[in-house]
Image (cartoon, helix red, strand yellow):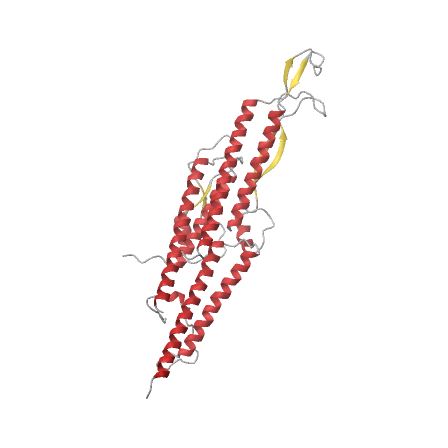
Length: 100
Length: 149
Length: 116
């Protein structure tokens, strides 16, 4: 199991990359694939939460508390992903500035 | 089973208890009614409570869909029945409603008993009203999960 | 030091508490129904069911009839005082659960923001 942890944030908020598409057998991680999976994971959380909210709004006798928790989870995942994105962009810019 | 089911259950109880109070009040108001449109004295009425709603099993299956019936645990007044107790006879020969022997038939209403029933009804109503407050609080607490604390 | 319960465990806890509250509300509604017996949830069993992760079709989630309550002449054994007390208890339990959930999210958000 890949434990992508940033500053000790429990990795449960960063959806696990279920497969590393194309990087099997290579020594390192295919970072692009990791990112793509992470984004898809967050998107999934979002869609799931959205579906639950819809269900709740239409009066399906849903469990309101679970819906709230799902929504918050999706939001937190999203924020985490944004931070990861920022870090990656910064790192890339730092590398760009390097002169050889 | 959701929070809204709970409110529906409590609402059914509030409604039933209120109807019961109405019946009791009618009894008390007519405690001295010796003459009604259908002839004879007022007949005391009683209410019968019954649990309604589907079984818990149905609730789980219907979980994602809409409820077409009351959630399990609801209550309602299944019947309002006449009290079969015979009327109380008082000897009042001067009363226009007196029968041949001078007796007047009064409704078999005991004001003390009716009052006690009414207090029981009020207490049950308050109990279920407090349940509604608790349910509202649950909703608010749930919503607060989304607010930054 | 014990590790704090995870979000899933808390979610399960809140679910069980809500179901218990539903029982109590039903009891209160049926305080005048002849023959009605007080129902409650066996907390331990319910929590175990939830922790094991099987919350698909659960027929009667560890609900049970409470023993030892005196019956009135019409067969009803609902005790108003007990139900009021239990209602307050479940409310507090629910608040506890929600506070812990919020704390979990807050911790995560703080960790995320601190890193920037």
